[in-house]
Image 1: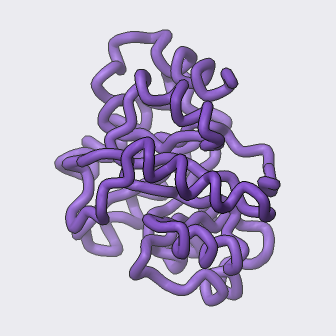
Image 2 (image 1 turned 120 degrees about the vertical axis):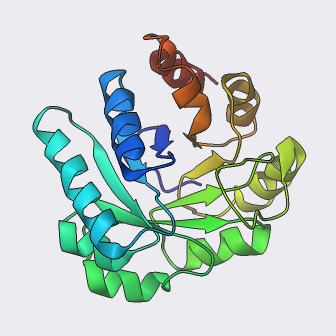
Length: 213
């Protein structure tokens, strides 16, 4: 059994060569119907990421979306974001929960069955399971799971209560029906969304694919 919460099935993870590119991509994603944004900017000074996060939060005046900070519970608390996504080497979930309080969203990365079980025990609000395939948006990539790896993990975990599982890592529209079929709740996508910004109906297509059984 999955501990379902009212989360969007589609997450957009920001990417770009500069903070300004991240902001521009986030704004375009929101304009096209994304309602869950994870700010993921690496190797930038805290002050730069902080200022960027505040700019993104101002977009809530125009768009209704969930805003998650990657890696840093301290930054998420500082800017009053909706939550944080923790990587394998980030702050422990219990520590982040103590810092952020009970009402913030805490997601956690997993790459294996044992990792998924650990995230479940930690009471993450959702699990980002991956990578599905090779992706250039992340350094030090964990072993590739592929559809077979996802199917094995979902099969082993489906009989216990667990958070919603989002596929991550090089996901394309063509992957979504098969991922939904094996029991994946949703997908976290970066470059594929950005590649289709000119297609105004693409976000709705992705959402539809994620809601089909």
